[in-house]
Length: 433
Image: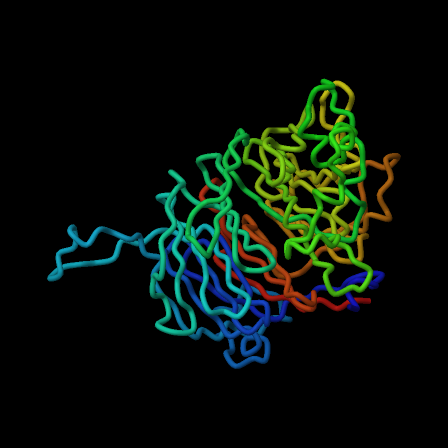
């Protein structure tokens, strides 16, 4: 893939989709055929992604007035439906029934666009049909007690993770509709969940000594001498999901997966980070906000290699934590890099790593910036950056890429926390240089 070996990136906006409310989330099908958006108005909208790029719908002169000259195309809307709160049949009055709508805070789309998941403000999750009887609720998942802010499907599309304002993370089995695991140690409302990308360091072979010396859960993720003494090999723990006993990183290349479904990270609004191993009882790694850093985080992501985590902060910074040494011996957080934005940029509310391992793209109130990590130096207070035209003057709720990294989407909304919105979704062309 050209994006993986690129030396630099040129990102320019080509489509603007005006909205009438804040946009909290966007989701793109794996084929990039359909783009789904959800916002505070309680509707899920489906756009023809390539039709929008090809200019099937043009913006009016009034819509283009506040945009850069590069943008002339609008969104090709193909359908929309309510993000409905299910109610009991006994409470429905057939002569005057009106659906109760919930703001859309999270979306996850099945790879073939047969169905999607949407989070509700009451803690429920709807599984809705897309291709047939669009918007029909096929199943309702209920266990959270507050707004579902994050949804993350696994690679096989048979399970998903959900994070909520109730500080809980649940793992759901789509075959049974029930939870298979709950993660309860988070200290704040969940803002980000992401499976760990493969291709970086072997996380099972690293031995990390916990500061207290008695945290066995760190050993489960980073390798443990105790497991070897008990006769349990790392290879046995890392048995592939098909049950054949083959290691997940076979040399034939056919079983290598882009993500490791056993390990994922989560971020909370109080600024804390967690790395979870589904094979361990407790969180494998806990990273609190460093001293002097405001307790706040709306976005975090893995690096392309899965060796480090980028975190957007309220004080106009992005911190990088390396898995090799994420904390000091006294338990305090140890950021490997700190990218300092101009103070006028506002909080960093969206962060995404680019696949060449050298660039990270960050969305703040004033602009979207691309940082080249090769230019980072602790001797200089500021790191050079490139500004992506298009977005300006609003909270970025999400940055999303298509699977080939040829296109990027940005949405503006506060996701129910704080901030104003430009009420616009932008689609960008990403040119790998």
